[in-house]
Image 1 (cartoon, rainbow, N blue to C red):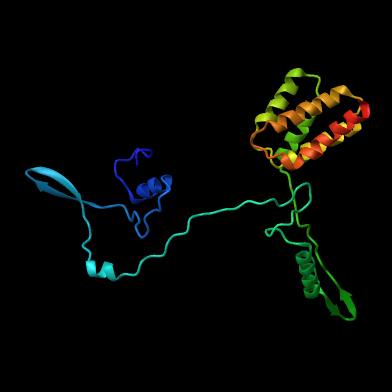
Image 2 (tube, rainbow, N blue to C red):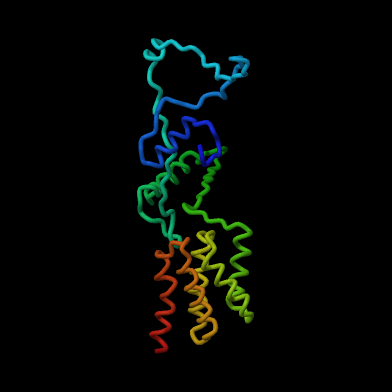
Length: 228
């Protein structure tokens, strides 16, 4: 009630406070409609009161209890990592995908005038589409980290280190780093830029980069073994 800067306590305020204290909320009570006030005069003073409706206790006591409301819940799981789908219950197995494909074929297979048509649209299990804004961001960042402008490079590394919305671009950045390091073993400027780029991504607290660590740093390790 205080957080909302109100002067009247509601049932929802009580339930919210109970949830904060990890106490089970009250069930069967709601705020209801906005109360209607009536006016009366007592000792020449105007007094406004809430016109409560008279209720029959026997009716209330014999009324069945309301259903317990279900709180909103959600779960998270890996849909795919580097294009590889983890074998977890939430993801379809290859046998499920094959069974679905055969089912579609059986439904779409038809014979008309001696001509057999078999129209099956096979959709990939994982579809990853980047928005135009993310594509532009990726292109500008990858160009900026290799720019000769020190200020531009610093801004790019800072963005990679602090931006909270890079989850979708993370596999693309890792692939970019892997490709650049593999193709520029003897170019120290490019290697330094890719190392700084990896350092910025590793220090971004909003990203879970563990599944990509081996992919991102394997080229650095291989290059070190080759030249050391």
